[in-house]
Length: 371
Ligand code: 6MZ
Image (cartoon, rainbow, N blue to C red; front, side, top):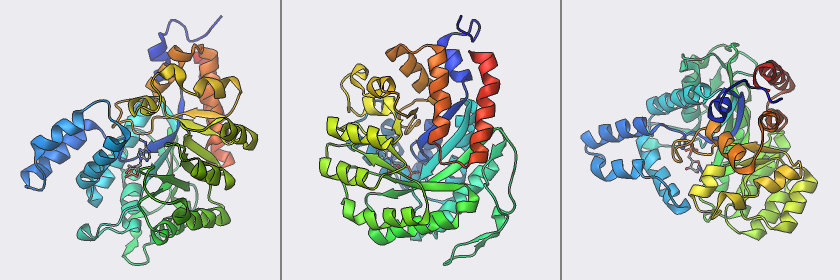
């Protein structure tokens, strides 16, 4: 008999301990926070609030519309204090959904007008993690030393490691496809400098019709040489030359993969590259006309390693619990299968063995309750 007592599927999906591997910080900001920030900037005369409010609240956006919206988000979240605030809130929101391990990705940004460097942006993110108070956070992997932004003041306030258990937070630094080779290399070097502060890898993201693969390749190769795991937004548009080139570097994971063709899937399966699957995001941005056409079912049947993810929980008004519910109700997975699916994401994390072991224990404990 199936476990989980009388719990309905929605509640069960929420109770299920979950691992989030594909979440963009600025895409996960609460609508209420965006509206508050927009109102504030409206009062200061920086933006016209009335024009912005309905854009924030709009549902169902095409991919190009999403990227326009990110430019607006970035306008609202440009200063250090706001970056700290949104980081704190995003982590609290994921924890409230019973996410036990979160790999949060963000693009370190320079903003001269605000005295922001890529390094000081990351310091603001780390401050946000430390500010979380509604839940215990484990985010520092090791070490107690302070980090220095070479061009700025030392980050003395980063301080000593916190070792509490509830949600594990790790960071991926994103290279935006609009960036130059030099900026991408700076991000990789920064990731290396922040390895002791929870940074576990590199992501390539941004508008998929912008930028050339050759621009990012030196930075991604550099990350490989440094031993930093890589995840790539791969095949968000049907650019098969780029998809091939991406698979050539054997990334540790890929995300989206909406436009891969059979030969490319064969390679992904042969190389055993785990796939981050963002159902709601893919449907909302029109990558598939129906959720039943999504490749999830094919990969699942082939027992290929997949992880359900939210992508931009704020932008697409979703939660990881909802993504699990969607997969279960669409593809007919039962609770046992859903539990194993959630648990199997442990293997795809960029976490160290100790964290993987702790996550395994969390699932062992939950198994008694849920299946
Ligand atoms: C590609 C995406 C994305 O980094 O400012 N981003 N890139 N495809 C997607 N699918 C819809 N969703 C988000 O978070 C926002 C940034 O993440 C990337 C974009 O570069 C966007 O500007 P951060 O925290």
